[in-house]
Image 1 (tube, one colour):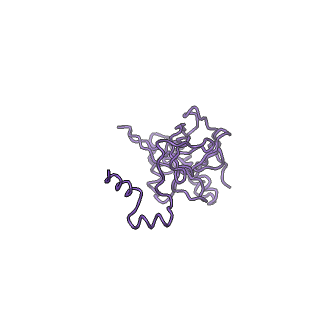
Image 2 (cartoon, helix red, strand yellow):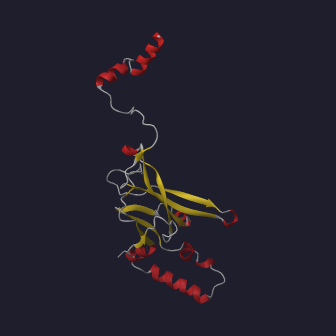
Length: 221
């Protein structure tokens, strides 16, 4: 049986007050896709510090994933294990032998767990619970989603170069609010992609169009 998700009541006013996550209100800056491509939506930027060694060890696996779970909730999946405690037991120095034995015993119990229990222990799930008036959407801003797909959040990897200290890596996701209507930004342009009538298409094929007519008129002046 899978362990229940850790519920995180999201504080939308204090980015740092969300357990392992940093969550920023980005305002009305998220550009829509598809039919909403000319609109911008309010939404959030969600960041989680990650250890990329998991991904380097197993490029085929997805180690961090986020999707809209319900109107105001996002389900995030991450490794529960700390990478060093899971894979670098021999690199612990300056610790007592009995402390290393505790790691060995924990690894042994994990190894002999049932496949279902082992899978449940490897992953941790967080349920980010936004305020009840929020209606969240990934489809408004994720061009890769089809109509029937789960609402997987669009993501990017953020790298911070800390000089001698090394690099810090974050998984970063965006999510839009659909309870606040998206608004057009910028000049309204004519839609050149609209389907034209067969007569207009035939005239264009023969070399006649609005642009040609205007050029001819300019030449007569």
